[in-house]
Image 1 (cartoon, rainbow, N blue to C red):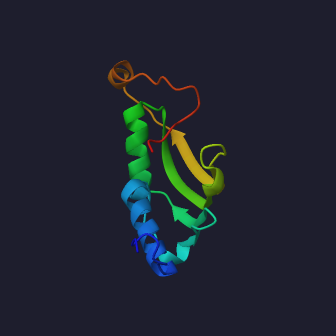
Image 2 (cartoon, rainbow, N blue to C red):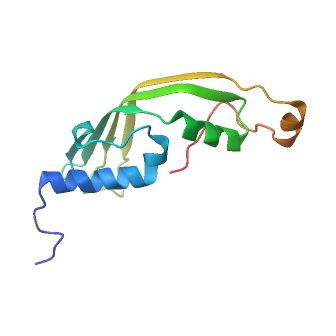
Image 3 (cartoon, rainbow, N blue to C red):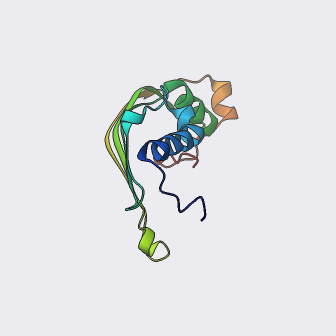
Length: 130
């Protein structure tokens, strides 16, 4: 019997998902995710993360690399819900819903030299690397 068909416990599934989230998004999080923050139903393709404090320094580093004219002072996400339609993965869409997003930003003041060196090319939309 394949090890993937073995019915893994909910705790092991949560730990695996927490590891993947920490690995790919952890540098944007102020604290390590706890198992209590995660809610999973992998069989039905849904997951939820609650009460996420953003790492201001990491987000500002990203904004600086993009030449953004602002910096983040504080950031919090109430919840992120993900839905994956396993039965129609090739024909249906995955969804990601962010609720309770609170971000406090302020203008970033630059010297004339910095302004010449970096020019912001965005049009009001910031894309984070996946």
